Length: 336
Image (cartoon, rainbow, N blue to C red; front, side, top):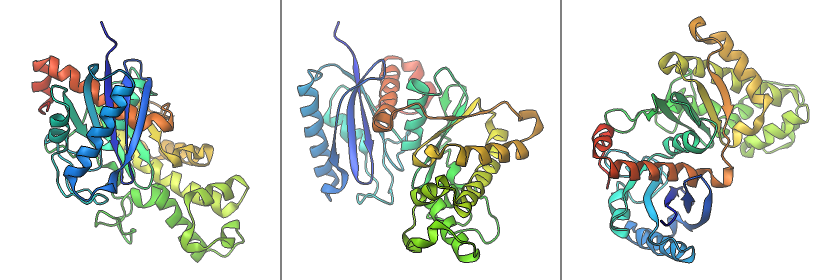
């Protein structure tokens, strides 16, 4: 019997990365195309089909793909659509249906990128063996995937789990891209850290390495480098960020009592600069009945493979659901 594979596809605002993945979570081969190369969605799909087919042929995997999983912004697990993402020009498009037509007979499933990351972590990473955990992605924004009793939480409409948009500052909060103010994402994303740096530099007067930089172009990496070098103001920015994150995590734990909260993304690599104030804030704010029960873990997925692995985990789920009608009914979403 030939070795089974799945295909993982991660659609980002700049690149669409796709890869062939085996059952052990090894990325056999991967490649990418430019997401915005084509203004018409149909042209993008044809380019994606052509390049995936080329990759499959080069790796003798044309007839070995058991499922296709897709992670994308604003992707809806139930409808199979990508629904008007802010950084893509196509509006609402039937992504799963179009990919299914491009690769007939192969089951296809789609979800948002943070949910795909949670599936990847549960299948291949730090959450292996866990049935209850929360995945938090700390990048330009804050994404999340909630797993309860071994199942991702999608809600009735497919969009549950937007923990980056819980409101942390009810009064005079920062304006968020979602149109509201005070969201967690405004403070605890890489962009949020840069915003904190600008605020701190404006209201505080002590010397800082950050004052040597163009204030409008400061990044979270600049803040990290300054903090590692011993800059007090930069360290205080991480304390501020970790404190807010700990408060948010205390509320998340009260909701689903996870075994762990797994952190992924560039900001998660800040180490104790972020984790120490986060843990202190969590311990101070969590309900006593939950204290000490939830671990804060870092993702174990290689960053270069993480997006493809996350999407590929959904590919295995699509395969299982296609083979098990009862599981498909329980999931509540069609396999395309």
